[in-house]
Each structure stands twice: as structure tokens, then as C-alpha cells.
Amino acid sequence: MTADSGTHAGHGEAVSPDPPRTPELVLCAVDEPLAEAWTSAAAGFAGSVRVHRGSVLDIAAQAVVSPANSYGWMRGGIDAVYARAFPGIEQSVRSAVLASYGGELPIGESVIVPTGEPEPAWLISAPTMREPGERLPADTVHPYLAARAVFLQWRRGQLDSGPVASAVRTIAMPGLGTGVGGVAPATCARQVAAAWQEVFGGGGHLR
Image 1 (tube, rainbow, N blue to C red):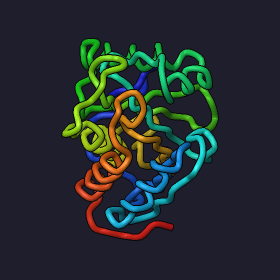
Image 2: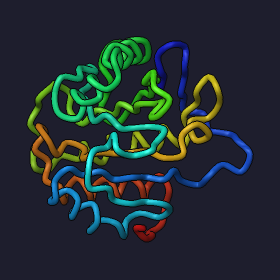
Image 3: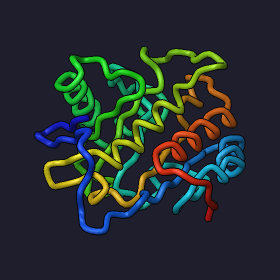
Image 4: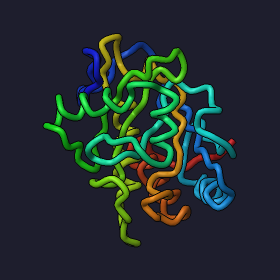
């Protein structure tokens, strides 16, 4: 897992004094069906997790999640919003994917790149589809794989300045595959909760 501009995030375990066990996770939804699905899936989360009805860019977070495609194109959905908000971010993602994965980021992996802004300072790109605009099948597990890649990036990733976990306290996450991918909100929410439980363990509460 790597970031552009000489910033790296690898699979080595993060080491920092008294690191938090989990990030704060803000599950964002601009439509009510997804907001309701996030809330219903809350029992699958432990730690500081909350639902935000509104844009992912409303959140005071150090990192935002991009549910992109494997090639790093950011032309539609929330990725287009990121591309407008963070000029050059698409090229940063594509450069990171090229440097670490030969140009195609597999489903289940992620890269973290700087946004160029003070906050959110980082964007975690975790593809939910291989090709841009791909419609995902009803039995897809890609939201789970993408969420797991994000959480492992936080837990294990390394930046030039130190562990990702030390630089990122709050992650803002939109729906994964619920836009052009066509994933049902409830499916996405259940799979994200399952990924959180696998990486961080336990049930929990939503605040």
C-alpha cells in the first residue's frame, strides 16, 4: 500500500505509543435509505462509529474513502466530487496504483495519497469495481473487500511521517458501491460492518 509523492503505507504493523484501537468512523449518506442501512448495521461496530446524513466532505476527518475503480479513474459519483475538491487527486491515485500495482489496484487492496489540503489530508482509494461504471452483481462481496482494505490501511499502513493510525484519527466513508455499482444500501452496510468486525473485532454501539 503506497501513497504518491514519496509517501508509503505498507503491510508492516503500525507502531506508536499507545495507539488507538480503532479510528473514529463516520458513515456518510446523502440519501435516507443508506442512512437507515448504516444505522441498522451499527451493532456490527465497536469503537467510535456514527452516521452522518450529508456529504462526506462535511466531516472534520483526516481521511476520506474513495470507492473507486481499479485504475484510479475518478470521473463519476463521489469520486468526481473528490476530483473537484482536490485538484490533481486522480493523478496522485493513478500514480500510486502504477507504482505499487503496475496500474491496476486489485479489489481488496488500497492506496493512500495526500489530498493537498490541511483537512482531509488523506484520501484512501479502495476500489469496489474493476472497470469504471461497472454494475455489480447482487451477490457481490466487493463492499466488504473495499472496507476491509480501508481498515487494514489504517491499522497496518505506514506513511513517511509514521503509522497511518497516528496521522488519521477520523475516517469519513461514503457508501461503497451503492451508486453506479448498484449495491443495495443494506448489503453495503452489512458488509462494511463485517469488515470492521474482522479487522477490529467485537460488537459495539453507535453514537
